[in-house]
Each structure stands twice: as structure tokens, then as C-alpha cells.
Length: 400
Image (cartoon, rainbow, N blue to C red; front, side, top):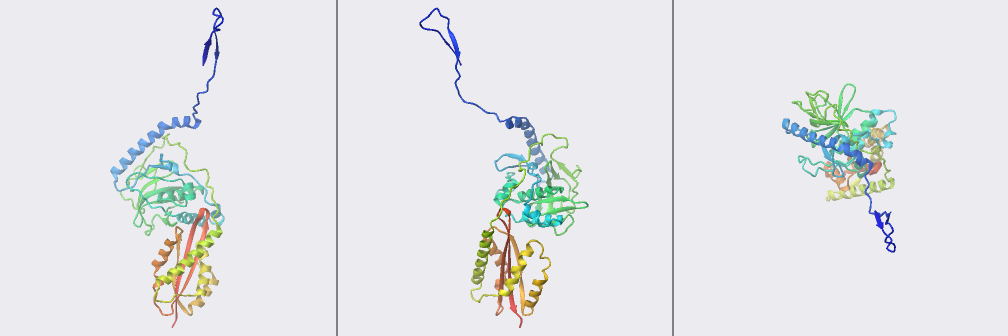
């Protein structure tokens, strides 16, 4: 501010001026914001293209799923491609099968399946999908179907696998998201909610339709007349089979992935696991007596001891063949008892879910005279309080 003054005692003197600086405030333009301005028009173009793409696909096949954009946790609309990025699984999983990469991949798929699934509360056809990042899914230990598939896909990419997310439908689960991996001479379809892997031509694969694919660079819609997995040609470079969202030379998809550089995991409290195991065991024993109000409930300690040794081996797949020690003990038990039962494995959500699963086996309803029971509970802890719960309930009827 320039201020002019004149000496009041000397009218013939010339006036003089000085500069005074008054602080009124400031405004800051982040450098990243300036950079994003150049991307804004590109992103607008992408969203318009995605809207046209979706309408075009739905016009061709109204019953097939197509998703090109979703909303992130901050309510910002983004391309689904930005969710795909190689991410590190827990080191604990990588250290178990050091010399067996296939076993490691199976274990990672199992780990993802242990994350509880949040139901889709919004109408699946209203186009308003909110997806969390993989890091958020891990930290909250919960995720929807698509977030499970994205997490598994990102883990596979960490191993250098060629992997994409598949959107489709299942006879058992309705709308689903799978992971497609391209092997040397075949394609594999992974169900992230069960951890199971199916070959493309497996007649027992629950996936009923393959509607849409996406990776970190593009989205493809299936325009083949037959969209069952066994009939689909997965070569998405063929434009007669797949309609792609973005042309190969399109420059507007350089937006950074919303995933972190790496996921930081926290260790699960072991003493908490032991307390939970004991609580589940006590609760189930009390429930067994409630479910059998007119018959006594007797517990066979020998069988319980055997089951307690078997369950930890089942978690890591080493129980495919029961080791000779347990096998010998079981054979001695079978000389005196007819044993009926099987193990239940499930992700931990709450105790009531475990009670319901045990009740549905119906093993408690046996009315044989002198019937005995054996119950074993095992919880295998993974990072971030993600737990695999095993319950083995068996009934033992003595041979006449």
C-alpha cells in the first residue's frame, strides 16, 4: 500500500510517500492440484466414455453385469482399473511353503476367504457401488465380494501372475466376483469367498456366467453369445469376443492407483485367541446339553484328545492324510465305537454363527442309548485378527 503525506508545517514543501505492507491473508495452490488440473479433462472424458460404454453393453446384453466406475471410500467416482495393483500378502503366509509356490497361492486364496463378507445392502442394479481399498479391507477385516476378488487379484500380481477380476453370476451366490489367472496352457477361476480354484472346463465350478473383466489398464465386456465359463474365449484381445472400454492408444488412464505401495500387517494377540477358543468350547458344550433336554450328554475324552491333535493339521493342508499316530489311535477307538462326525471350518465373525453351524449338523440329535460325544475347537490366527475356526463334533455309539 502506497501512502502519500505532506508536512503540515511546511506548505511549500513537497509531499513524500512510503510503502506500508498490511498482511491480509494468503492462498496456497498445492502443486499436486495444479498437476491434477491437466488430468481433469482427461478423467471427464473417461467417465463420459464409461457411461456410453455401459449403456452400449446393456443394450446388447441387458442381463449381463458391466461395471466400469465405482465410488471410493471418500465418495469420489473412479475407474475400477485403479483398484488393481500388485500388493504384498502377509509374510507369515510366504514363509510356510518356501519351496512350493502352488501351495503358497492356495494358502493366500484361503487367507482371503477368511475375511468376513459384508452383504450388499444396496440394490445391485442401481449402479451405486462403493469399494474400499485392499488395505482398508484388511484393516477392517471385512469386505464385499468385489473387494475380496480385488485383494486376491492384487496378491496374485505380487507373484507375477497374469490375473484379472471377473464379474459374473453364480447359481449359489447370485452376483459374484472371481479372479481369472492365465496359466501356461489353461485358465483358472478362483472363488475368493471359498478359496477354491476351478479349471475353466470344470463342470463343478459354481460360476454360471462370465460377463465382464478388468485389470489395471482396461475393462472388457463379454459380447460372446454363450457366456458360460466352459464356452467363453478368454482372449480379450479379440474384439469380436470382447468389447473394451478404452482403445489401446488412449492416454487418459494414467491416473495413479488408489492402492498403497504396500500393506502393513499387525500381529494377532495369541492370548486373545486362547480365550476365544475356550469360550467357544464352553458355549458349545452348554448348547449341546440344551439341545438334548431329555437325554444325558456324555463326553469321550479319548476321542476329544485325538480330534484336538488333528485340527491344526487340517488348517495348513497337512491333514489330507492323517498321520500314523492319530490313525492308530482312531483305529483302536473304532474297535469299540461307531464314530460319526466331521470337521467344520469357517471364518470367525461371531460365536452365534459357530453355534448355528454346529446345530445344523444334527449330530446332537442322536438318540442311541449310551451315546457319547467328542468336541474339539481350534482357531488358527492370521494377521489383523483374521481367524480360521475349526470345530470337530463327533458322536460315539458303543458296539453291541
